[in-house]
Amino acid sequence: MELDAGRAFLRNVVLIDDQAFSPGPIPPGPAAGEIVTPPELGLQRSDAFSPPRTQDVGSYIDLDANISEEVDTAALVNAFADSGISCAVLAPHTARGQDRGRVVKLARRSDIVILDWMLQSEDRSTRETSRNLIREIAQADKDEGGRLRLLCIYTSDPALVSVHREVVEALSEVYGQDVVAGHSIDRFEIIAPHLRAVILAKAISKSPVCKVTESQLPSILINEFNMLAEGLLSGLALFSLGAIRDTAHQLVARFSADLDAAYLSHRALTDPVAAEQFAVQLVGDELSATLATAQVERLVHQQRVEDRIEKLLPEQRNPFVRRSRRSDTCHPVKREDAIDVLKADPGNRPTSIARLDQNGASVPLKDQASLTRLFFEKNEDADDIDHAFAAISCLARNPLHETGRGNAPHLTLGTLLLSHPVDAPNGEATKPLRADQLDGHEYLICIQPICDTVRLEGPTTFPMMPLSRRLNLSQKFDIVSYATAGLSEDKKPLRIMLSTEGRRIRNLKMIEFEPRDGVVQAEWDSEAKTWRFKDSAGKTYWWLGELRTDHGHRTAGAFGSALSRIGLDESEWLRLMAR
Figure 1 (cartoon, rainbow, N blue to C red):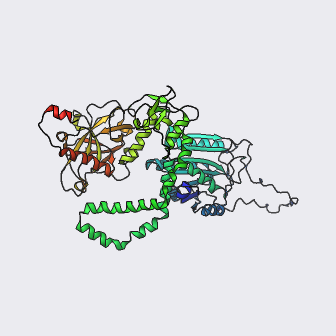
Figure 2 (figure 1 turned 90 degrees about the vertical axis):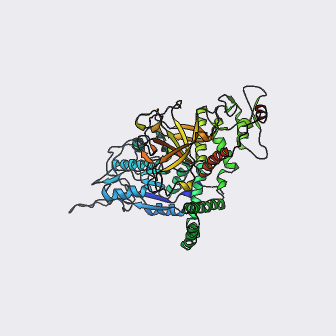
Figure 3 (figure 1 turned 180 degrees about the vertical axis):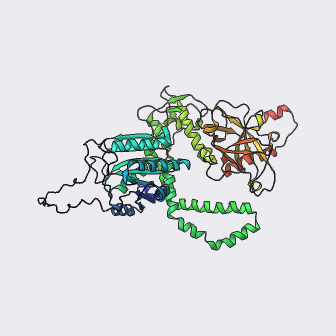
């Protein structure tokens, strides 16, 4: 059975069309006393009440002319229902006031938004209303850190080129140069961060292309939504969320209110903070069990992996592989050899890959930390992707995904901080940073046990372990994060590689902070676009993210191991021979 991540995930669609419940245009009756000549049998003009248009798909006479926009709502809703998807229908009478707020609120909660291009404004239909709604929805998505969304402009307007251009302009006001527009004679689409937009013509449209009936529309939009998550991991994430949605009520039933008595007993007999963590862990374990039962790993099984490799590996050139994990030197290899290595068939796993630039030479795979370079023309592009993937694996909260709208982070085990230079005036943090600049800046990780970071009643000292920043792959590192655009000199996120090597007890820093509401809470800095802490002395520390719990424990455990070292005064020859 083919796995359809989009169909498994999709639940909510909204159609916004002020003519959704209209019976269609009614021709005017004859004037009083007018003599009517009946038409000849069999002759009917289907376009009798349509405004005049040119034959060009990309233009028409009056951009704001009233156009018959009726849509077969029942056919559309029923077709979505056949796919197990609910479709809400809004027919706003005006684009202002209560109707506008209702439209935006529902659109922000829907996976697919189907929007008529000519919506009512005051006493006439206008495309500006739809443009404003597109901007408003896109801006709300961006402010929340991005939302997977498919936007469909479903219109009877035949000027699809003009519609496409105006939608591009509206989205560009929100996403700037990140908007990618593309269209051909029979396809009009726009790509923006986490968003895909398509332009389709209603069945009643005079457009010669992209004409879709209401009953055909759902299957087309489901396929378009799948393109938002065509990758292996994005498809896995979508399918997993769909599985959780399907079993949500069963999960709630397992954690019935009857269990509260047992939980409260457990909480009273143990540490309250540990009990809170335990409750969250129980829910997380049940979610993991749900994913295991749904066999979501099928989304990344061998056949899908092989198909994705074929699609991603460039056919026009030979791919390249690094000489070794810490080298920037790369060697070309055959595409077929690269595919064999990437397939990683357990029964026939290659141990090396042959180079094209030297007969008989090969690159041992045991010397590789990554094969991502095979997919990219530049080392920097491959490094960016490796860094992003590593950040997902080690960070519970990534500074690049923060907007200042969610819960503020509090100082806890695994919190990563950047302090300003010691000679900064008035204790204020200096910015911006440069990728090649390290002097004066200090990187820290909090190793305070979680139970000692909550329910604080007064000034509290937190142990901070210094970290070493690495500037390139030739140096060892075991933590990755980002400095946000507001902290970076070139106004782009800055990759940060940190190492816990060189930990010494004498380097441990004890810094006092003032708690608020029982925890040491960060404040949002709109200029730096990240969170910041201030210690009791007023010194600023920029928040660089929060490690996952197991990574934080590993770092704290490594420091604890350093405490248990036994120092001996012995012969130097004997000490060195032991290495």
